[in-house]
Amino acid sequence: MILGCIADDFTGATDLANTLTRRGMHTVQTIGIPKGAAPEADAIVVALKSRTIPAAEAVAQSLDACRWLKAHGAKQIFFKYCSTFDSTDDGNIGPVADALLDELKTNFTIACPAFPENGRTIYLGHLFVGGDLLSDSSMRHHPLTPMTDANLVRVLARQSKHKTGLVPYKTVKAGAPAIAEAFAMLEQQGVRHAIVDALEDKDLENIGAASSGLPLITGGSGIAIGLPANYRVARLIPKREGIAALTKVGGPGIVLSGSCSAATLAQVERFAAAHPARSIDPEALATAPEATIASLLTWAKEQLTSGPALIYASAAPEKVAAVQAKFGREQAGSMIEHAIASIAAGLAQAGVRRFVIAGGETSGAVVSALKVEALEIGPQIAPGVPATLSYGFPRQALALKSGNFGGPDFFSQALDALQ
Image (tube, rainbow, N blue to C red; front, side, top):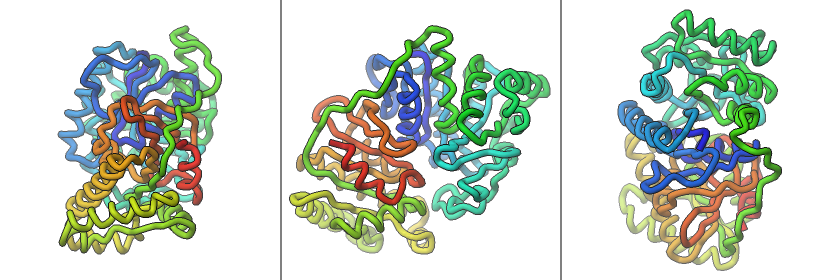
């Protein structure tokens, strides 16, 4: 292993593994810290479910992952979070990054969630989603991590106990040597975290080159674009061409959606117009959870005899807010995740092997319920979302989608890709 990665949710881990694989690194995604030997790979992405848990727990889990990765040979550590910087003023990005800096006994790292291919860019420290500031995007309504401030320097400074600075686009545009010089100057000034501007993939390649000597890198999957080239220059990995197709698993396919992002809502609407679909009723779930889950599971089994189907908890922001107000934010999310995970486990027992999952928290719950320990990364379905195949038996084909990723037809495209 050369690169050891810690991802704060399961879809983010898959997103990062996809980027590294497409850039020529043999990458394996593990679900949590492996209990046995490390898989044979250039990069291992440890998927945690730490984005929205209490900061102290996120720190503890991330440190455990870091120590395991270092013990198994990782030469550089990557802390991966969402390209929309999903967090609150209490964390978890700042506290985890602080703890990893201390663990690795280093004084400086970068924070760059830019992902231009999916419309996430950073200019003068401000994060844009498409043409909108983060604070004007649909992320301002996120049920768990509402992002109401687009100034990432300000956001990270509220989370971290250390000084936060900026590498502006003027410097980034000048290329890798200028970026590396800016890193050194900021470190001399006592800055431990530097937000780095980026508008296009070339910027990410230069930032990656400038980061070759950093023990710790933090950011979205986009920043990983520039890292494999460093390892090839150092002759740590060979040049590879293409991504091998995954083994076919066959059988019926199911779409399970817990995400309430604008992109996912459009995908649910498009798929439901042409396929059987059933929404999860929070009231019924709260009143009679086991009966509600059993009813949905029975319905899904009946539908899958003739083709794919969709079960979803996705809803517009005002409906989500009403459910949270009635049941509590954490309780509402927990009962939905439990329901979808239980349905997935029941369908797997019935022989379903193809799963399309929308939402980071939902993906984490489903993968845990399916007892998946690691994923083989296959070809990309949409930017940030590859086809994957579980290790072990029976093998299951999964597409784990971050809420905001993919076009309106993503669910159908994913089922076609998961053969």
